[in-house]
Length: 214
Image 1 (spheres, rainbow, N blue to C red):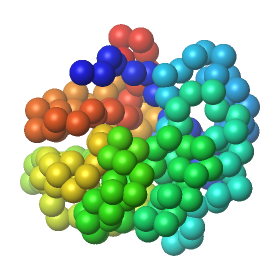
Image 2: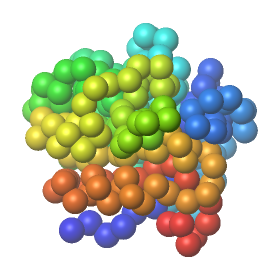
Image 3: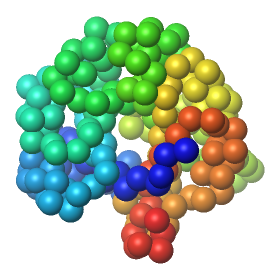
């Protein structure tokens, strides 16, 4: 089993580095290249870079920007945002990125993960689930959203996680929308529910505010 990894996540909005809270109000916090240099010095295990505009706006990944990230990064880097085809995934890997992260396109068509895994290897395919507690006075449980929370999917997070794993994802990222940017700790109940159903590595995102949270 892999040892635990520390993976900073960089959110890209309009080419800049931003911080969000519950997937809303992106606040500019600097140049992503400078952030990568800092995490190089801190010797992070891996870096996750998510372009929060691409899928929501229906545009392709910014390959020129991704190439700059890959050239600067001294640790394995995973890129997500706007990936909807096997060709796009291969092109990103060819730029020097180790992994591609896919959310909306994979949920809508899990076979895409199978195709990409056959092309670049299962170890380089990451499925991302953006999860929040169901909204409503009498609602229970969790739901999965895409397109920055604008699209809600019917299948439960646990079911989707297993489906995406079986389709070819070599890793699952569980991103708590409720904890995003709050720095008040992870949603450990959500993490435990999904971890118990998976055999591939799982990364928990959303809520870290201190070393004790990690």
